[in-house]
Image 1 (cartoon, rainbow, N blue to C red):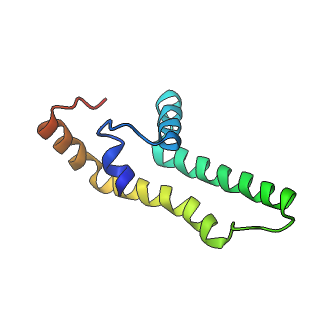
Image 2: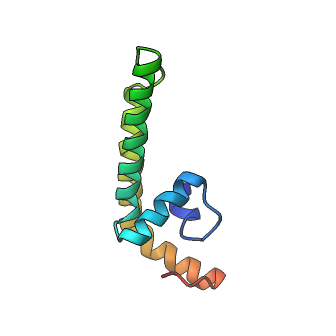
Length: 99
């Protein structure tokens, strides 16, 4: 829910969210899909790093994998349901011009 509200409001994003937004803006891919790809890529890199260094999975478990996928899926679902209402509220109440 946090990403749903703060990213379109153009509040300074966290580094990862900012990188994902830049990729989404440049490629035209929906942000939630970029987020899923980015998060899954980070989990795979973590898995490879843990296996190479620790020779075990470390703290990468099934919950990490599920979260990497479901955060983006839920964001896409919430945006489809409420994105237009959020954008109208942002535009009316704050004067922001959303592209």
